[in-house]
Length: 410
Image (cartoon, rainbow, N blue to C red):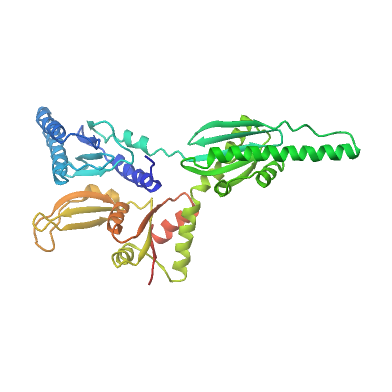
């Protein structure tokens, strides 16, 4: 299953928050459930864990572990044990730094890839290693090094490279004698080079046209051989659209492939940011003109609920959380926003239903991106998570607070 880039950024944000929590003892529970997990066996295991925790010597730790287990069981009952198609990960435990004040949190994560094994931990920290492995991105780039003598075709997947093809031309070296024979020989030599480049082009088409996750292709080689190849090879238009750069190399064998990688680090990094830059620049332009853009939580939420928001931009450095409650009487969902994640440890999780005036039940805490995505679901609004690894991304976070929207209309 391909992992969406926004999923990766969101999961990184959530894991960063989850890793900050530390228990006073062995009292933080991590539960990984594959989509086909058996309801009765899972609930039995949790019930058994509650029984076994009665043997914990520390009364406070025993209380915290049992409280976390019950929170998990209640949540699974609330969702009627309907697990997402990739499974579900639940983190629950007492995280309050003040012994006299209780704060048992529950965080859920829908993994970007399918879980295959049920896992359970009770420790002083939440276990995130299986999720960490899932967010290792492997962008794919095609690599070509070529001159009139030979060509090597390779691919870069994440940090690993692979040679996919090597071709030699048989084009003879330059003719040293003068006169008409030399000119005729040079014409034949150029014709042979053209034929070779076309043959390599056909090979490139067959390798890269349908390659999954291909983000771009870089062409390398000495002198003007790169330009000559791109001019004379009959490359598929889809391949031409994927050419993101040309690099000078001294070699055209496997060593040349390594040269491309070494000399293209910035180019490879930049590719992923082009779309993001364009989006932020469009937003900034609209704000400057006081036209189809707005920013700030209240302004963005108003535009979203009125159906005005076409695209919402959320900075990955925005650590706001949304607390979701539900009224046990009228079943109304109630949301509170916490604009500083560090304050979560001090949150009381107490909320009254504005309609029934009864205590609402804490359901879960959501990252602001998750919440906005949930609200935007029925509005036809796209929610985009943007990084702060570009100057534009930093400006968006520092100047506009990391939350903005492009509008359909004013």
